[in-house]
Length: 112
Image (cartoon, rainbow, N blue to C red; front, side, top):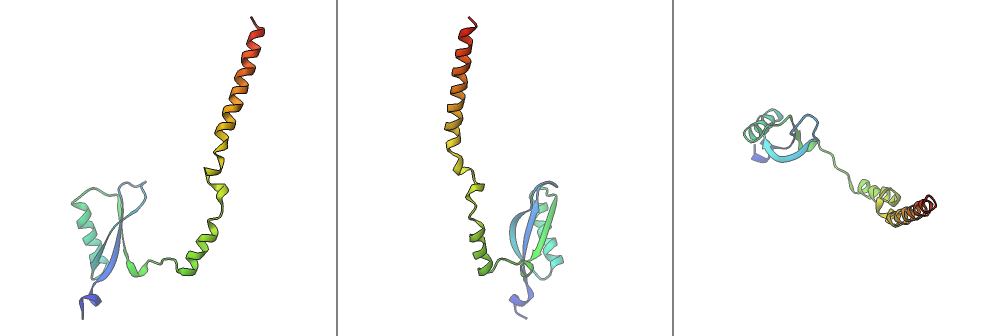
């Protein structure tokens, strides 16, 4: 049995607090999931406290294939959802505020 057949690749994720998001930390080689968990815990417990650790066999992770990635391009055509198209609003608001100040100033002249 070669080393490639004995060891499996695992991805390790952790989060620092119970409310934090999981972050990918590193990959490791281990003969099975139990040993991968022990190795991940040993690595983290020496360095810093963590709230949780996930160890996932790389074979169990599914990514997008080429056709699915092409669908992402089609979903990214909603520029109205970004704020870059609203740059003119700051100038418009400033103009509106200036008109309000002028009206207030004019009205205050009549009170004197």
